[in-house]
Image (cartoon, rainbow, N blue to C red; front, side, top):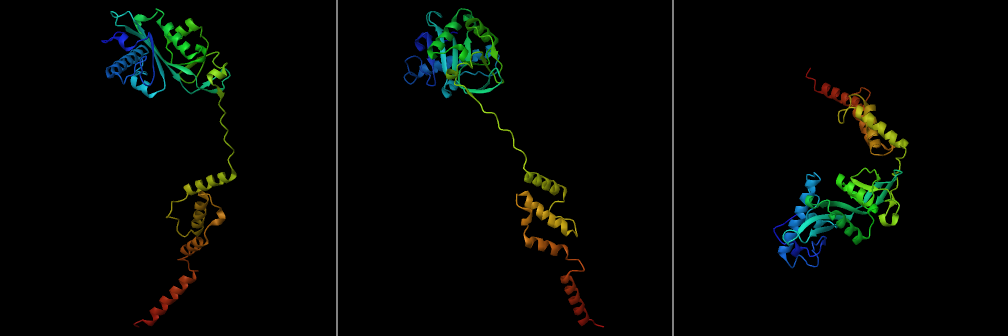
Length: 293
């Protein structure tokens, strides 16, 4: 992949490692503003090319993402191409990620392995050994075996590359987008594996919870407050008791003054009420005292 600037002047080594600081070799971007601009252009262009090759709608590699994440990007160049100005052959992005995986027995395992997150070799440089050179450089730099790594959404070409180059053919099915191979779960030290405890089963429903549920159902069937049925003191008392249950209090803790008021309100028009009899006798007495006849 050619660019309108000298690649050999930006990336001094054949394989350059870039991190969050976007440092190219021994040079720092703070010393050369134009250098940082060129590095950003190269990374963004490589990310777009990789997304197009994988038929992705959005690039998963860019300079801004590399600056915000603790990932490593290995960039390979061809020194002699483009009239001695060099060309970018491809890149490999890796990083540690915490994953929940399934082993062969279906046991959930928590691990934080080194993952291959993006891998791209330009089409005109493929099948020339550049992919193997770049991948081997990354393995040696991190002192890793390819079987101990996880691979994020590998393309069919990448899977074929892993099978041909490193004999990785038997993968362990996962529920996420990552692919791991047999042998990954054998080295617990390197892969940092630990079993994830099973979720505790839900406990049995307590009898009091059942009682609360029945009270709520009764309240839903009753008319809404404050419209109780007329001449129904028992329904009013029952509603007060139900409200106490629904907030977790005991049925025996109904306030006495509320019950008494409800009883008076319910018997206000009853002929047996002493208050009603006294009022009726007083009205009769007044009527007789002012009778014009």
